[in-house]
Image 1: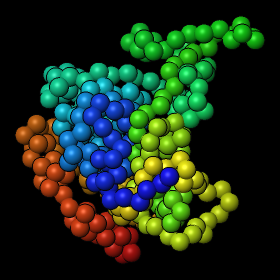
Image 2 (image 1 turned 60 degrees about the vertical axis):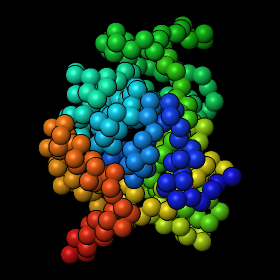
Image 3 (image 1 turned 120 degrees about the horizontal axis):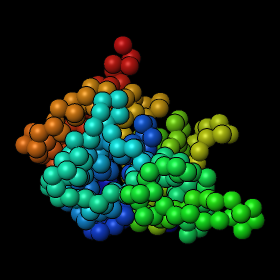
Image 4 (image 1 turned 90 degrees about the horizontal axis):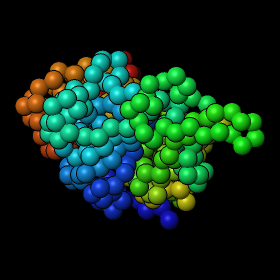
Length: 286
């Protein structure tokens, strides 16, 4: 049954040390606030999963909370490297993480297989790709019907999925609009799910093709306006490009990174966070 909780409660009740966890969102509706709360609670030894891990994964890695990352294409969108990720891989600071790299397509298939209750994803892909040489979880199988050689990888079934969405109703159903990555599949494939939302409403007023996650797929709903910042939430606020550009400079230096995280994440308050979003809305109005 869906619980309506504070973000602090949503994280502490659902995510435990050593869990496998995903924070999904594809340029849009990225659950930054949830990842920041995980950092504040210092929940570590995590296996983090993500299509296109970006700034929040750089932050989790830089704070020493990550044991392993399963991913496809890592980077600060539109800017460049994930410098804390690279420092971990190349120099072991603050710890050296394991990695399991896939393509976007493979990750999507793995989430879908997990959502369907299947042990693996089977697809056409990776033919001639050198990822096979560095990822032992990429296997080859033969189709029993056609004899065709296909690729198989393990299904993804995270312990917890975190996503951000526009609305939840008071029954616990969640409305997601705009660009969807694998948010739906991530929730359906995970053992538990925590959804931060911009607002809670009595009922939805939406078009027939809207994505709605029913209440029985959600473990906890947390009302966190601005919870996707600096990514954007369609209908609420735009993408804060300046923050992504700033992050490249912040993450380039270990001491600057540590100080920035202390000031902007560890000591962050909901009031400050929501004021930032208010400023983005005002810029849109202009």
